[in-house]
Amino acid sequence: MQDLVRIFTHIVFPVLLIAAAGYLVQKRFKFELSALTKTFFFVVSPCLVFTRVYETALAWESYGLYALFTASLIAVMGVVGMLVSRAARFTVSMRAAFMLSVMMANTGNYGLPVIELMFNGDPYATSVQLIVMVTQGIIHYTFGVFLVASGQGTFREAVGHTFRYPLIYAVALVFVFKGFSIPVWEPVWFTMEKISAAFVPLALFTLGAQLGRIRLVRGMGRVLFSSAFRLLVSPIVAIGLIRIFGFTGIVAQILFVGSAFPTAVNSALFAEEFKNEPQFASQAVFFSTLLSFFTVSLAIWIARTWI
View 1: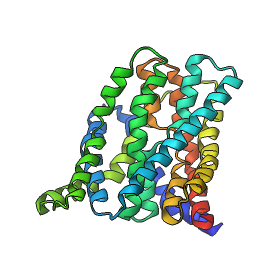
View 2: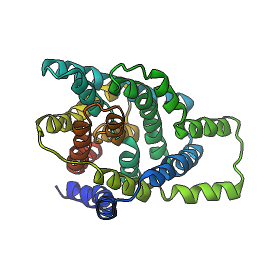
View 3: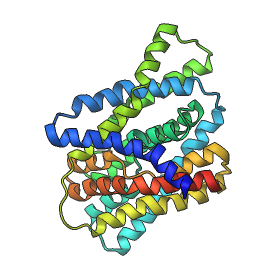
């Protein structure tokens, strides 16, 4: 019990505090999030990806395995989510929203800071989570957009969104530098490291501000069901996949904890853009994030104790 309390106070509670600050500031001042999110996605995140992957000695095949694991987890959750939503006789639009809420986790501005705090900024641990984040981002901006658009002929637009996803280019660039052993000029490296240092506070502050824009309404049954599905079923599926892939040690811990992260904020943003159950999607993000501060603490404890 003491270990669980320490995990909450030293890893999860700081995440909660920074996100709460963003939430309260957004509620008080209602500022425009566009500049904040663009800074996060187009400047800070690519710098973090480049520096962490560049300084980590990971075998090339490992990157593919982590990406395949992530895609497999999303696929299994999608199939299970589809079967459950069909059994519950959801409408087509609600089925798409429910599937996306259980398939896509917040691996970026929630998950990556948790992993950074959990492993004290270890570049190896961060690199594993970065591969998970980039893989999910690609799937989210292609299949995710296509799903939530409910077949409205937007696949070309989804692909366009994917190629505007800056982390893809950061990963490609760092692989070129690592593959050809190209050194990074010291002033450039220093600049990228300093920018990367802003990732955790900026990511969590942005998350809190995004949550501050969500409107809460009645009708919580499906929302709580979705949140429980996202936070409890996904780790169970992940345990099976971890054993199938044969992951052990730190990698297994990261992938297990990552499977317990709440619904991705982009799910709500896509739902709003395409007018596909936006109230449900927003509340699924909000309540899964709120509940995750407890379930993620438990997942970290399980990972450290049993995995």
